[in-house]
Structure formats: C-alpha cells, structure tokens
Amino acid sequence: MPGPNAWLLDLGHSMRAAIGSRELVQIVENPVLHVVPLTPDHARHVLIWQKHLVPVISLSMRVAARAADHSLVALVAYQEVGHHVPKLGAVFLASPPRRIEVSDAQATAQDDCLADWKGLAISCFEREGELVPVLHLNRLFRGNR
Image (cartoon, rainbow, N blue to C red; front, side, top):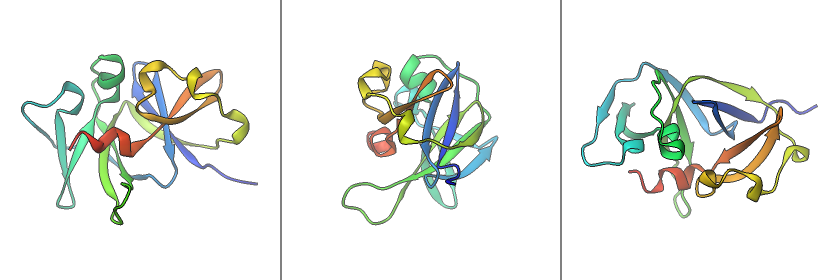
C-alpha cells in the first residue's frame, strides 16, 4: 500500500496548497527574516539558510492580497529547466504541514482550480470537499529572486 506522497500546506486564511513529498527540505520556526526594499508585498523577505540567500513568499498575500502573521516557513527545493543544482525557496505557513496521500482519483481539471492559482499551480486535486492546488515551485520562485 502506498504511503503519503505530498505535503499539505496551511497558508493561512483557510488557504491550502500541496507540494510533493520530496520538495520539502525543512521547516524553520521563527526564522530571522531580512526585508528587501522595492520588492512586491508577497516577496518582501529573504532568509539565510546554510549560507544561502533564500526568497520567502507569502502565498496568502500573493493569491488573496491578505497578509497573515506566520512564525513558520517551509524551505523547499525545486529544479529549474536546464540546471542540475536544485534551487531553494521558502513559503510562509500558518501551521506545520501535514503528510497526505494523493491518488489519481482525486485529480480535478485545472480549470476547476481557483483562477488565482493558475500561474502558480501545476495541477489540482480534491480533498475533503476542497480543491487543493499543487504548487509549481519553479514558476513560483522564478520571478522572485
């Protein structure tokens, strides 16, 4: 029997998204954040993790234009096309992520996903009556470095 293959992320304001089980690197509690001037509201912060400057995205601000007070970030890794070394990014969380199992039977048409997620989600699935976008981390961080 297959086990959990995704992480369910609580982004605040009843917003949820998912990432693959191998994309989560670490959860950082109460991270030391640095403000980057002249950046969009959703991409205002960076953190330093093991000598890497990591952009931190607020998806609640990016998708719903609603700020949320978060004390957790999910450090994630993603692969850019044509690059062999994974890149790092971070996403603000309202609570710790949960391991979940997602099957093909839960898949929904991407058009069913909320319009706000279209540029950020690679797919969508249904879980407990809620549509959950699966984040396309490359798209999310490509313009936020």
